[in-house]
Amino acid sequence: MTAPSPQRTTEPPLPSIIGSSAAMQEVYRITRQVASRKASVLLLGETGTGKELIARAIHELSDRKKKPFVRVNCGALSESLLESELFGHVRGAFTGAIENRTGRFEAAHTGTIFLDEINSTTLHLQVKLLRVLQEREFERVGDTQTIRVDTRVIAASNRDLLEESTEGRFREDLYYRLNVVPVYLPSLRERREDIPSLVGHFLNYYNEENDTYVAHISPQALEALQDYHWPGNVRELQNYVERAVVMAMGDELTVELLPAVVRGEVEPHSMAIRRFDFDSLAEQLVVEGLSQADDKSEDLHSRIVDRVEREVISQVLGQCEGVQIKAAQRLGINRNTLHKKIKDYGLEPPAGGAKTA
Ligand SMILES: Nc1ncnc2c1ncn2[C@@H]1O[C@H](COP(=O)(O)OP(=O)(O)O)[C@@H](O)[C@H]1O
Ligand SMILES: [Mg+2]
Image (cartoon, rainbow, N blue to C red; front, top):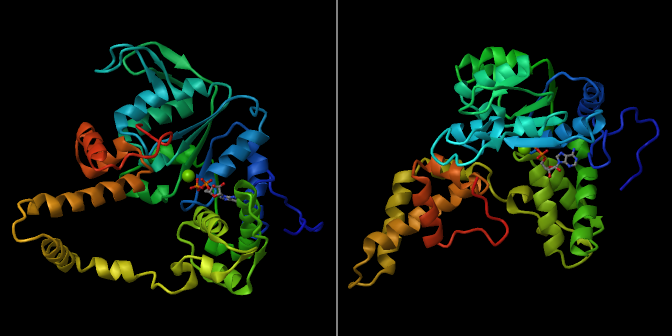
């Protein structure tokens, strides 16, 4: 890792934020400037570009830093659960509301609330959010008493909210209320010059964590990393570096330690092309399943259908980061049904990693 050059004018606001490209310096500049203000901030950028990191930096640099920073992933909960998560509820407000519950806005009183994936909220909830932003007040679900909070709002979206509002999925008034100070996080492919220092940063991190010493990067590996298009941005880079550190035999990150997509050996669009051929894939799958069964099998249906079902659930769970409520919604099946299937198929996360909400 090289030391920061003295002529650099805009340093990262926190030591864990890496990147000195012009695009990131602009992010740092706005981050510092807005931190001390009360105005809402809207963080825009593709997934994995560092929106959450910047949200935390804004909080850390503000005079609220000793107060709570509360993150709510609006994309992980169904509308009604999110509503009571945000605003709280009173006993008996709905089936299952057996106790009064404080919402996250109250928990973030005097501090900061970070509404991640705000584009996932429903229009109904957006009305309530607009009111909190404008009036700083709301009621718990099922209650008439108005609660006032002093909470700084930071929101993030990986979609163009103006476009979402043109298409009727996002309230225009909320968009304008949030968009007072927008911060655009550049994608990694727009700041390739930062790739070496990011790789260095994650090498240090994972070497420490794994007690390894992968200190060098081969020129081919670095070239491959710099040429790749990084759809998952910094998060994707971070994952590949971790994997390389874990798999390395020596002290060098070589090109062989990188996934085939980064080495350029897999056509990035080959999956998309195959996808067009869904019908023949299905046919092939059944042929293969039948060929593995013997003549007397009386479980052909479950042998094949269950295998597909397990795969569907596993992949959708993965996409929903293991959040079962969201996965059930995406799958269009009942939550309890999903829970049972997860058990039946042995898809439960390892102990300690379970998520139910
Ligand atoms: N500029 C950066 N420097 C160091 N790590 C970063 C940077 N940007 C993102 N990361 C890391 O990448 C991962 C994804 O970042 P995150 O803030 O969760 O992205 P987003 O919220 O935009 O999806 C996190 O582990 C984060 O620490
Ligand atoms: Mg995020």
